[in-house]
Image 1 (cartoon, one colour):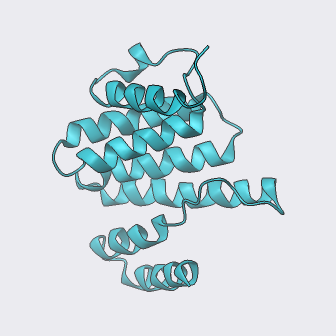
Image 2 (image 1 turned 90 degrees about the horizontal axis):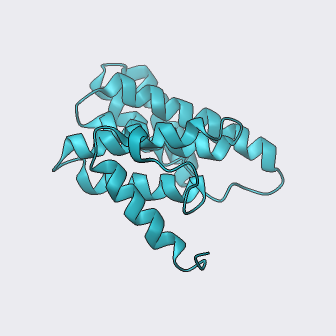
Length: 158
């Protein structure tokens, strides 16, 4: 059995391996070396590191995030994180509509996580997607919605 301190490195290594393949379903182990949320966070970091320099790697990491989320259909925070990662993975294709759909889903799942955990708060806050939603909406020419998204982002930031 691995110690708790080893788990993040195993998680990071698995995320890097998953991001490097076009078929993450073929190598995603049935028993994860870390929690699904920790793996999703590591996959998100892979997306952020590669989205401007290696788009296919970012997309593979997003695909892997979806596979992880499928294993935890009732875990609202896992679903929120997976959608955030998937949206970020397709943002620079550019596929603003699909990214926006994922960001909206991330917010909906996050709200569900907040309700499930109340009065506690989720371990991970995905509401930063409010900011990227402004960008997506403006790129799609949906300016009134972008203005509303600005208000939502400001409310979250303040």
